[in-house]
Image (cartoon, rainbow, N blue to C red; front, side, top):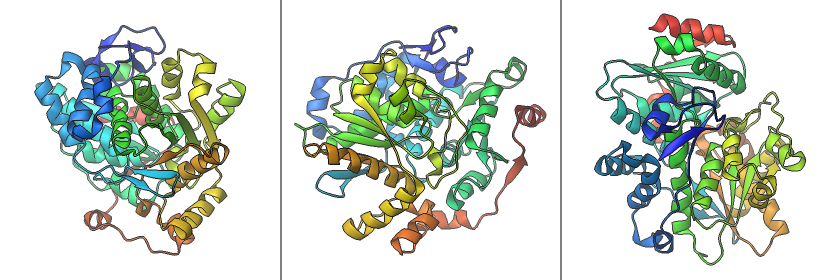
Length: 433
């Protein structure tokens, strides 16, 4: 399998090269030259396969010969070794809980897979690799955990000061060793712009071996398909494919789901569940994609005003707007509606949503009101304990920190404060070598 750049001005790369580079030299995102079709027998008989076997068969065509099959199976086995349950909430709506991994967020799958792939690809290199990543909340914690103490890899994480939750910040800033957090006095979009500029700077990339751990990296993006296959394995109405609502910020997760659908997984429809940072909602109405400055919200991981991965969704549908709109709709959910949903779902159904899950739930519930004959699921992308203020305010229930996180919460924060602007990041990275 080879990958081309969405900007069409860079040489094709295999999975190894695409994963190591992160972003194509022409600033585009790598995209597979073809979408492999999953064996229909696997789809029909998912119950007969372990999650490890499913994940291996889904990802192997994308990896090709760059990792031998035995090693790839080991990598996916370590990636998916925690539960991903589909939990009924109402008669029509189920929650796919993606927060049972080590950092209590859906980013664990992609970060674990990518860290193990890079560890495999760089194990014989003398030169250190620097993983540079921007986070709006959960990506940083998952990447820090996945790459912690991986030999030959340094991780630099940029996050917006004051715009991540206390648990998220601790996950970013307490590990030390090969993990460095840069606290930027700006927005996630500022952080992401700084990272993108670094990859496009030939002077810096000649001096540093840089790669990205954001979902722009194929090794982070592609394994997110696993969620959707695991969900369908647990789906009770196989003759009625689900509507799936995905809390969406940078659009890597929903893009992976759409890719899974295009490869043969039965899905009725996707909903991009957005907070007020809803440029995709506007695009689906106007066919004009107009980035804008992100607005801080309760669902902070979705506070993205210029979603990088949406270009990949356009690629999947060959930039044919009618085809895209047939399979994808969008919803915009305010903070007030998010809070109301957390409270109402807890009182009516005794289920605790985090703010991102609440956006997904309400987007799906509103859709199903207009399509009462259908059923669906939303992705619960983070543990409610990561957002205690909003959850406790609306459920009147204290959120107990899991025992696994208690030692981390006692550790001192270690971060370097930085003003937005690429030159500040470049100076830091230049002096780090």
